[in-house]
Structures are given as structure tokens and as C-alpha cells.
Image (cartoon, rainbow, N blue to C red; front, side, top):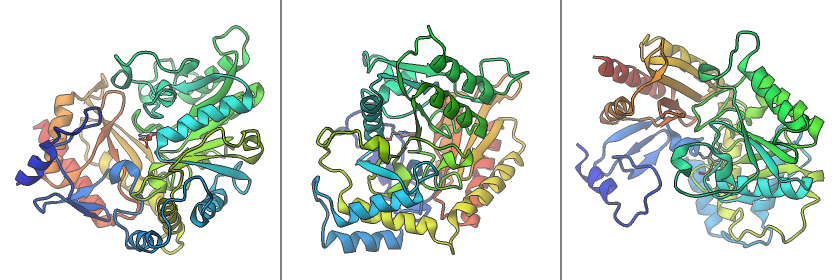
Length: 433
Ligand code: PMP
């Protein structure tokens, strides 16, 4: 069935190792579906890890590429019409705290955005430590990689940037502390306050707390709003900056433009990437104007920052996300809740927990709900094999790679979405048998 596709995807002799590998290849894509080189069609519940938020090769995006590519693509560090327009647009759509009064630093990838955020936070505060969280993912380079936890990314690669202190993330399903009297959010939030505001902890010079408002790679974990509220208070008390990493959860994925908006917390900086660029690389960070004023010109040059093509596409993407007729953000909330119900309705003993916000849903699979032992990698492999053979692409995440992500393009039709979910239900049943 997939002879040519397999041959293509197996042809990796000239590709460096390091990235993920899947026995599948893409040839062409449209909306929430793609075809492999043999012409088999797949429903994509991964949206290219959330990049294709309005669906792949959206006609308006394709038109914007055509139009912009004829007039200007690369403008080096000189400002360009599209880049300036995009910075202004981002300021308009930023969450409270940044909205109308922020500036944007553009990068090519989410990791670059985090590298920049760390450097800026240190320069602005004159401090050097960073607090990040267990299970967090912020990139794999020297500074961003130091924030990311996980043996797979670090082991054998030597020391990374120092000064990072990791605190527990309120992952209630697997929280290591007693939650009889306090929620995981309260415990995790108070712990950060303790780190930041108590003498003689290891944290005595903290520039920033960097947090994913919904943890992505760590297992699609949506904390209650109280967590971010406690972090905000702790940062205010200590003078550390609060940086929300919205590379995965942002750009409408959770049913609001930014996931931090579910908590009414005002961040000092926000990093974005993936879903803002609709198929093209676009990332960066927004920061409060008064903070940005302290960064010296020429201290952070970046050759490819927001080329005009990516900027034109991001502007088109944001316009589609905001189109009142499509109402994609509210639709993501409604569809997300319906999807969670449907998945619970499978009544599979392998489903330990279904959780999420909007169309960022995690299905935590376990050998046994009582012990919560993560479903084995072998079985996850079998599950993905079944899904691919039945035309569905889903990718796992989580500390034990046992959480299946449901993150389709926000434009996916209801019928296609539920068809794919039902195939997932069949896949679960096939595994049990
Ligand atoms: N931050 C978060 C929250 C992410 O999910 C990712 C990518 N998974 C990154 C940063 C890094 O982005 P990139 O892969 O574009 O460098």
C-alpha cells in the first residue's frame, strides 16, 4: 500500500539523525489532510505539530505567497513593510499586559525565540538565573535546551547553560506530592514563590520564570488558572519577569489567541512560533515596551528575522484566525469539548485521562488505570501503526511518550475530525483484543 512512500521515507542516508523518524512520507497536503507519494490520503490530527493552524496550503496563504514573492522576500535587518505591519498586528492581538504596548523580536524558530527571551531577561534584570518546569520543552539549543527537561534531549551532550532551576509543573495526574489539602496548582505555585522569595534557597538571582501555559511536549497538561496567577504574584514580589512560552499553545490552539488569556494573567514576555506562521517558519517574542527600551541596538542581530514572505503569510494567517464568520477560536473550544466527550465515550480501559483546552487535547494511555503505568512504547507503536494503516496521523508526547495528541488544524471539518477520532477508538479496541 505504501511502497513508494516507505522507500522515500526510508531514504535517510543523507539526513542527520536527531529528529524523529516515522514510516510515512508526505507528498502533497490540503487543509487537514495529506497524501503520501502512493496517493493514500491521511487525516492529520497533528497539523504539523500545530504549525498548520488554518490547514495546510490554505488558498489565501498560497495567494499571499504568490503576491509577496513577486515584490519582496528578504530584507535583511532593514525594516520592511510587511514586517512592520506584522509587529503592529501582533501588538493588537497580544494578551492583556502586552496588548497595544509591546514590541516584537522576530526569529526563525521557537528555540531561537527562547534563546532571545533568556538573553533579554538577563540584560533587562541584570540577574542570571531562570526558573523553568519539570516536563517543559523550550527547544534543544544551549540556553533553551537548559530549560527543557528530558533525558532523551540531554544525555551524553554535556553541560548546558547554567543557572536554571526546575520546579514541579502542576501535572495533577502524576503529581509527586500529596494533593489531599491543596491542589497541584497551589503546591507548584507556592513552591515557586518559596524559591523566589525566601533567602537561602538556590534561587537568589532570578531573572525570569519561563512557563508553558499549557504544557505541550510534556504531555498536554492544562493547569487551572490559579497556577499562572500564583506565578505572577511570586514574580511581582521578587522582580523576576514572567515569560509565557506559547510556541505550541498559542495562535488560537486553545480557543483563545493566547493560552495565557484563560488565566487573566499579564505576562512580561510571550514567545510564539509554530501556528502563527501557517506552514512557513515564523517565530519570536513580544515584550513590554518599557522593558524592550533597555536593550541596546545592535546587541542581537539576526539575518533572517521575519522575511517579508513569512510576515505576509503570518498576517494572512492571523486574519483567518480572526475572521468573525469562521469564528475559529470559539469553534476550537466547542469542538474540543465535544471531542473530549467522544473520546471518553470509547470507555477504553487504556485511557487513563483525557484533558485539554480547545483543540489541544491529550489522551494519556496506560496499561491499567489503577496503577497508571504508562502504556508501553511497543503498544504505542502498534497503535500508531493501526492509525496510519487506516489513514490517520496522530503523534504522541509526554514524559513517557504515552500521551496521544489531538491537535488538528482549527479549520478541520467536524465530520472529518470525528471520523478520525472514531478510527482512534477502533485502534484502541484493536490493541485490547
Ligand atoms: N517551545 C515550545 C513550547 C515548543 O513546543 C517548542 C517545539 N516543540 C519549542 C519551544 C521549540 O520550537 P522549535 O522546534 O520551532 O525550535
